Amino acid sequence: MSVSRAVGRDDLKTRIGQALGEAKADLVIKNTRFLNVVTGEIAEGDIAVCGEVIVGTYESYDGVEEIDGRGLTVVPGFIDTHVHCESTCVTPQEFDRCVLPRGTTTAICDPHEICNVLGERGLSYFLDSAGGTALDLFVQLSSCVPATELETSGARLEAPDLIRHMDHPRVLGLAEFMNFPGVFHKVDGVLDKLAAFDGRHIDGHAPLVTGKELNAYLSCGIRNCHETTSADEAMEKLRKGMQVLIRDGSVSKDVHALAEVIGPETSPFLGFCTDDRNPLDIAEEGHMDHLIRSAIRLGAPVAHVYRAATWSAARGFRLYDRGLVAPGHRADLVLLDDLEDCAVNRVIRNGKIVGPHSFDGRPAVTPVGLDSVKLEPVAEEDFAVPAGGSVQSVIGLEPGKILTEHRRIEVPVVGGRMVADPSRDLLKICVFARHGSNRNIGRGFVQGFGFAEGALASSVGHDSHNICVVGAGDADMRVAVNRLIELQGGFVAVRNGQVVGELALPLAGLMSLEPFEAVEVKLRSLRAAVRAMGCPLAEPFLQLAFLPLPVIPHLKITDRGMVDVDRFELIAA
Figure (tube, one colour):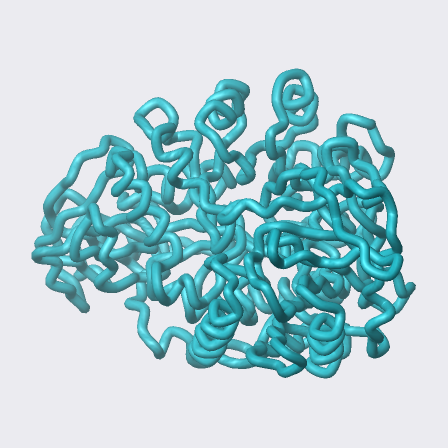
């Protein structure tokens, strides 16, 4: 499947004429090297482009416009197979501007962050945005809104809501099916969605799912998984016909664990994705170019890394018109100064050289959800945790992972209430429902943030995006939450009653209305403020944002309380 203008007889005549050399090609990259990701060979010669399609390779061509390709290596445009654009903290238009110059020419997004806040209104915003980006942005229909019944979301999307959009030209299929317990328990609403998309593309989400349960999951037509975190897990999924999408986001970094899986036999069934990656990391490390570079540095075969990032990714999503430097394929090309270092020199998208002009004239899309934080100011009393048993369930944070540990730890009691103990890195964590349907507050404790005073609060809290706050004391936690309410969403750091860093995310409480360069600067300042508080985590707000996600093992917290993900039930702290 692809989206492009209809091709007529005259278009084909023009292509044929340029391919035969009877007329100059519209664009020719002269005297270059290019990677054939089918054979793994490095070829030399010209690459001829007619309009948006490659029409010639392995031959000599003249062009109306020519690029001197000496010293460069050309590869197909990179495909991000699974991304939540909202996690970049910027709008889809700014995501476009941020990643296309780095070689990402196609991205397949799941807008379930905004859909959990705004429902179909959020989905429509993304579909409208995807129609006007310079890169090819496809939208998967969010399958799990809400992700579970163990939390309060701002909206619901049922099978009829999704069916209304399934034939939209920007839609490829159903987005990651996170509710794998719902599959195993044969929940009617879950089965209705899977049945509606039978025969179409369905993305998976199956962390640590194995054995007969993995068989059952795959039997529903689910095709891939981006939640794989070990080589053994990847190999079982590959053996059972599941495409593995190797992820490296701002928190979840799986390339190190999975690079050894990449090889000639497996690369046709692999892909790469960023999932959740903020503009600061994109600026400092890169986007898909960073994943490719990382895998190669870890020893994965160069040609097979590029194959996974391009041709294999395209085939996995039935995008048969791209992913090769070959005639008849879309002219989405990346010109590299260095193949192994994935050093991008320039990018060609749809046969046009990418530059600042590429983003001019894109249709404006009106922001939505600018009043999505429907929570009254909170008081210190709202954070109180009545004394329970001496030993409590505590979330154990794992740096660089969204998997958490379920620890049993003694929590101190003062004045009949359980309190944080920073000397043991034991902090309080609370989740406030922010969508206006109730005023639930989930309360618990967490280890791993490392700071002894202050608080961090976020309106980004996967996947229902309630307000999540972690802190050493109730007073700072109150200040942080109330500042978030004033901002209508974002990230806030507080120390000694003062806001020491913040980033406003007023679009659905998830995205900034500012250019990505400005967001990068503010994130850099916010990161420095949090480090000054003593937090050692590379991405503290993204780690915080995944603690309310009750479909990732092992212990999480939502506005309804602590969740034992392995048992898929609420528990007493």
